[in-house]
Length: 195
Image 1 (cartoon, rainbow, N blue to C red):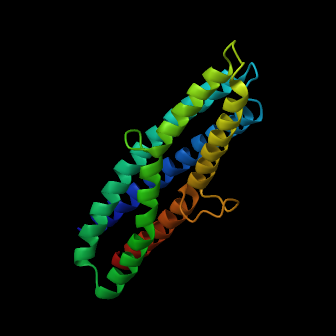
Image 2: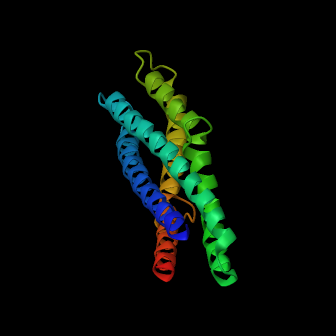
């Protein structure tokens, strides 16, 4: 019974890590396209950069749904394990779970397909590109500066969601993957102990 739950949980953690890696890679592509777009929002290729970023952003949200699904399974399996583990191992597992909690909230709140805060910002960028590339640019001087500030804010949000050391963000997909790997190592240790 315990070995079966451990194996299933370990597999679900591995799948969560894989989807988190896909999330990271797609988000990196979104960032690359947005930075190219930010460099020259009125170029002929601006719409293409936005289209590429949009396609990758769709994959980011798809990956987020898979992360959410498999991580939800991991959480329920960890609750089952918590009922049968000795007290010392329960404390260690509780520490790992506490380490993961802030990440799940941050990633879901930012990139969720339905509730994500990034969706609105991304749509605003699309509207901004359409307005900047209109034929009548007589009023665009004020809008260019507004668009540039919205664009830099959104690019910073993407960088924070990546959670790379350059941004100093403690919450993001990179630290989430690291915390999942710690959980995976703990589960492997439990498998060795129980076999």
